[in-house]
Length: 289
Image 1 (tube, rainbow, N blue to C red):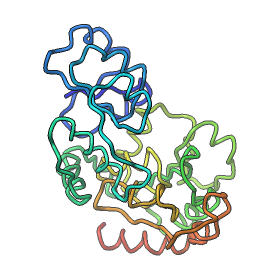
Image 2 (tube, helix red, strand yellow; image 1 turned 30 degrees about the vertical axis):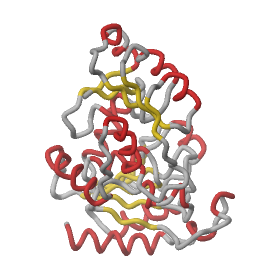
Image 3 (cartoon, rainbow, N blue to C red; image 1 turned 90 degrees about the vertical axis):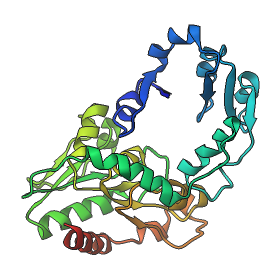
Image 4 (cartoon, one colour; image 1 turned 180 degrees about the vertical axis):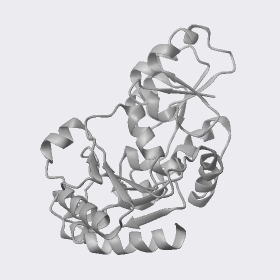
């Protein structure tokens, strides 16, 4: 089995705790000239460029909801992501119908699959320090809890727990847009200073990850970290669809639906207080170490 991903995604995917081969668009091109007769290509994300690269494959599977699928693929699977109540990880199993597999595991089964592998990759930080990684952004992909809320939570954490060290991660653009990070020797802002590999290394060393629904949140879940995540009460952005794949998570999600969330000024998600979040985190620290 080979995962073909973009050059940007490669450092993230190769760290997944599964026994798979990972290739980029560039490194896969030459082998594609001699695709095996029994090769099956599943396009989890329909990409016209990759579909052209794999045009010699005898079996090409993709969703029916993208026009390019009909142009390049010969086995089209009809299912809806937008209207589904399944988790995104479950939805991808629909594509296996193209090779005769009709089973969709429960969300709990998927977490168990991930956990069995992730346990082998856990890195234990020094026992005298509780490392917290905070990712207060999402790249605009969801409704966010709010940068100020994350910073207030950071201040509460370091003032209430002498052994906590906080690392704030994100992009250079996010750092330029949101500068008001508390000045404290145990709060370190490395936004815009890390490569993808360095970001993964920071998450690996964490005892706890706190953030919005985002790529780094999913990395933390795959690596079997404790995760605190925030979700808006919007069906296609909800925890039911995007929650981290770990049994060690605390989800903050207001009861919905809410017709104001997508405006960016929703009182329901922003109404969750840093004090409330800190109380729950403290309970987890005390009960599970």
